[in-house]
Amino acid sequence: MTQTSGTRRPRVTVVVPARNEDVSLQACIDSIRRQTEQNLQILVVDGGSEDGTRDSVLKSAEEDKRIEVLDNPHRTVPYALNIALEKAAAEVLVRVDAHATVPPDYVARAADLLETGQWGGVGGVKRGVGRSRAGRAIAAAMASPFGVGGSVYHYGTKRQEVDHIPFGAYPVELARLVGGWGEEFTVNQDFEFDQRIRQSGHPLLFDPDLVIDWECRQSVRDLFRQYRRYGRGKVKVMARHPGSVRPRHLLPPVLVAFGGALLIAALLPGTDRRMVTAAAAPYPLAVVAASVATSRHVADPVARLYLPAAFMAMHVGWGIGFWEGVLSRVSRRGG
Image (cartoon, rainbow, N blue to C red):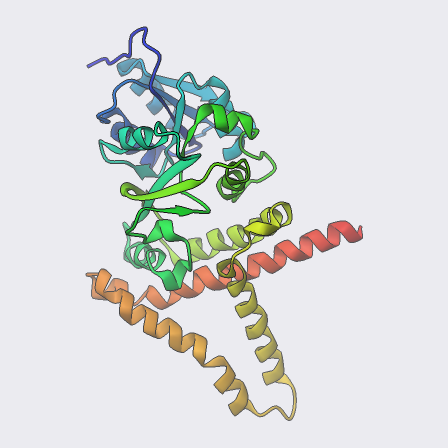
């Protein structure tokens, strides 16, 4: 059935950046169309997809006149968000990831919270969804404080002010006022944007009643690559916003540096390897303990076997990426 908001101004603009997302995008769009808040403008920003993404969205747009397809020739997420921000016709903008689905009351809840005027942005729980055995372990690891440190949006249960929200909802006027998303940030652009929202004097709210089901990486290798990109990109954000640095951002680089130092020490002649082993032992023991504690959230006993590798992929990937980012900045300055 064709739906339309008629001539009324939409209450909310929902934005979905997408590129080659044919496998997951339809479920995302269907969840948006099922919202209790029906007075929507739905902007899908296509970054030059080479699969069936665009055709799928155009078919949905024929059925639902609220859906518009916009082109993103730059292909990256921050450009997509800024293209949508310029076209937004509502007072509230809600970002939904192409790999995510949201419950029917998600948009209305987010809009209601923003319309109190207390918040510069609101977001909720980013709940990982695993399709493979490794993916189910990864989803559980990402919901563990040991895995993600102080990133409350992965596991929080209390409404609270935070420094970052996932796939947030924002007042359109405020998002435009702070300049939109930083187009030089190909990763971590949401965190960087949130820092400018907070610096403008507008706090961010985490509300666990808002839940985003998000398809996490489905292999440990892909998870490692993802967190390596995150760590590399974090260096640029920290250079722009040094006040945003938290212990959770620095622990993985320290871990990697310490592990590298121990490895070098173990290779040197005359080293007491028992001391090296004793110094190295706390982290693998912590990984084992966290894996045992987290295993109760993974029903499949075979999937549980992936938990140690998932934790290590997140920590080591981030740490290596961070040092790569540091070296890249140093080499550019030296050149």
